[in-house]
Image 1 (cartoon, one colour):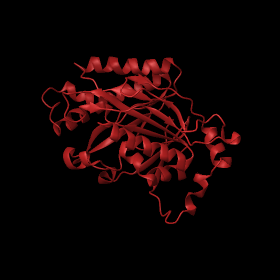
Image 2 (cartoon, rainbow, N blue to C red):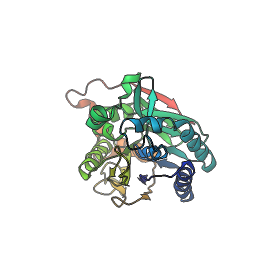
Image 3 (spheres, helix red, strand yellow):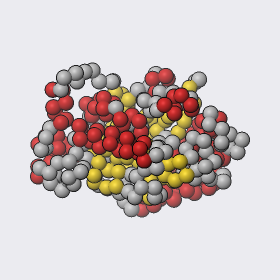
Amino acid sequence: MAQYPIGEPADWSAYEAKLRQWVGDAAGQGAALLVFPEYGAMELAALDHARKSDLHASLGAVSDLLPQVDALHGELARVHGVHILAASAPCRVGDHYVNRARFFAPSGAMAHQDKIMMTRFEAEEWGVSPAVAIGGGLRLFDTALGRIGVTICYDSEFPLLARALVQAGAQIILAPSCTDSLHGYWRVRIGAQARALENQCFVLQSPTVGDAPWSSAVDVNRGAAGFYGPPDAKPAAGADMPADGVLALGEEGVAQWVYAMVDPARVAAWRGDGSILTHRDWSGQPGAGVLPEVEVVVLR
């Protein structure tokens, strides 16, 4: 998981060099799944001097570059043989901008997840629309690493979204985030850890870090990358689980990769014979209700 610093690249070459280094560093350490944060792509607005500091215009500045950005990510996924959840970005679809996270397979194939729930800032000030505005919804990615879902930042704070992904088969949930305070970081982290507990699965959080005073959208960034699972000490479910369920955690505010091992087989062990069985017992709670629909997308 990347603790990715929002920079101010002078030109496309500078951005490309940065991304190549970040991906190369992680792949060089043996990483198979690279997770970048929510709105990490907003640093690309710096390339458009006329629009970079304008809150609304910066959406278009980044969206216009997405074809070039995605081509680069696809190439890097192929060259290094890795899966990459690219930093999410505003993407123009018709009359709307959505917050889109693009997911790349080692083949270079790409699919995406748009954010479902908008924060007040996105909805009231920035003009970013929820996925439903363009007819979108939840997707589950069937990959060589297992079945993976994505809940973008605020989405992680809504239990039914993660639960719908898990009911569709998710073993791993990725939670890219962008928060401008420790309060915001902890809201997402608490949500991510709660989703790991409820669903007895892995949840990976990747935040933006650092200051970007030139940007009115991502000027302050706080957080730490975290790798979470359900606190479970029963031997059948993996006695090496830490008591707090935190398998790896970065140093807050520091630009770095945070590494951990993901073994989907442990998810089956937790759910089959854990100390508690929250995954199994979900439907027994009053008002469990109807879950959102999930589209399964093969990403190979």
